[in-house]
Image 1 (tube, helix red, strand yellow):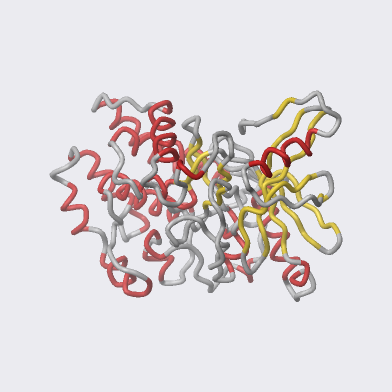
Image 2: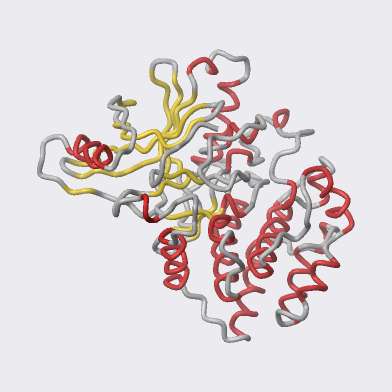
Length: 384
């Protein structure tokens, strides 16, 4: 179950207490409400809308922090936009799993669509990888936990019992969130393909981040769950090696992806046991039919490898790494010296950046400028 953060208070207006707390730390506070959600601080803004730290009173004196996405009102009247929003929300809200960031409420007030999502206290994998490669045990732990969420989404069925055929299509370090408790959550199903979406909005469009796309995806062909497994394999390689599977940017990566990862994996053979290289060769195979058929199959292979190598997969160790990264003053995105204790870090939940990703835009970031999805109240948000 997703972790719920609450603030206890005996005062009659607990939402105002959280606002006062944020104000005392110099965080911009917007006193407005959206339905039952009290907006406390704007933490990101972009061409499609804004993401806020908000609170909702679940019972008298108990607050639950949420990440609240507000879509710009002028977009609501654009042809096709409402359909796009509903499609994204239907996919995100159909998922409920400990390893998937939860979207739990949606609505429209005064011509503004909103989406309320799980608050994740931590950072994303890209921020952790900016400090260097991870130990092998931690790399496997992140991959195995992410595979639990992906496999759950891949296996989802609709009310009629038919498979929803959900494919994330954007598995990447920026969409793997790591909490202070050592949890791993897959975020941003906003570009997912499923039977819940209008096929016309999916076919013939390239969605996702090129460095993690399999050959069939960069060619604009049909994708299934094995595309997500390939992307997760590319992320696992990056965690271990400390570099991306393929070096380069944009379209220059496509010929390398089509040629396959043979050279990169050859360089890994001297660093990890051959059995792990074999698993990576299979999941990263250019031929989709060679790859694992399900996330469960890949997860079981990684678990067997970890057991054979006597690797300890510790969520508490992951939690320690997250805490160290958040406290590290060398981490310029969230310098510890500039953030008072207790001010939360908000990482984007599922679908928080989906519209911007679909339209080739990005919310304003506070990370290194890459295609990440991390927003924070620890430091100021300067205009780009």
